[in-house]
Image 1 (tube, one colour):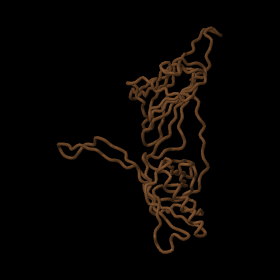
Image 2 (cartoon, one colour; image 1 turned 30 degrees about the horizontal axis):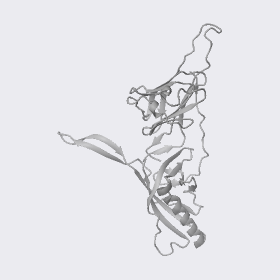
Image 3 (cartoon, rainbow, N blue to C red; image 1 turned 45 degrees about the vertical axis):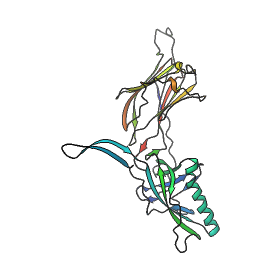
Length: 315
């Protein structure tokens, strides 16, 4: 079957700024409304104070162990913990009125994460790579309380809380499979066209930790099976067991593996079409994983797309 790969879009290289723990980078905070706040532009009225930045390295973990009768212990479980980022911020203005306006705007941009959902801390490298982490304001937006502060300048040391401790690549990894043109059995000579799309491939997860992919299936199709060959974990979506019925030409259905969710392009909930209780909506570990996906009732135009964003320990 033909393989079509998605084009890679490389963002413009940002100006380098040396920040402890992550080196040269351009950092932007994106509030829940989507407004972008540059954090490393030293010509702006606010920017990050490099001294004191922390929490951008490897994720924190809690280790659970059992005592060993011969001494020591044996590791039983590793649990990633929420990440805490310490973010010193300097705010200024040409006069007290401008400074106060800037101070209030930044306060609202961070604290609204407690009401409107998380903001995003974005780290862009000079090579064009970009990683993000979702953040909630926790504490620290308060002035220094010293002589001369609070008039035309002040600084705060913010604590940002991240429920998912891992950094996410903004560039998605995609795999695309689709049927070729079906042929007539007798024209120009006896031949066979498969009624299935069979995709056997090795998917490379360049990240540091597991990812849970999203699958998009384009009809026609009646049943779709996804198998992770190294573990044998598999799940099947039988469209004929759903309220939607078989996928017609051009219709799509999206399967999210974390959280488990199945939606048609008309937003129908089709999760009951999965082969519960044996279905395992498996993850992709770091490195290469052999994967097979199969469509029954396929024809020209039937396709399967796998999509995920690699996740990393550090920025």
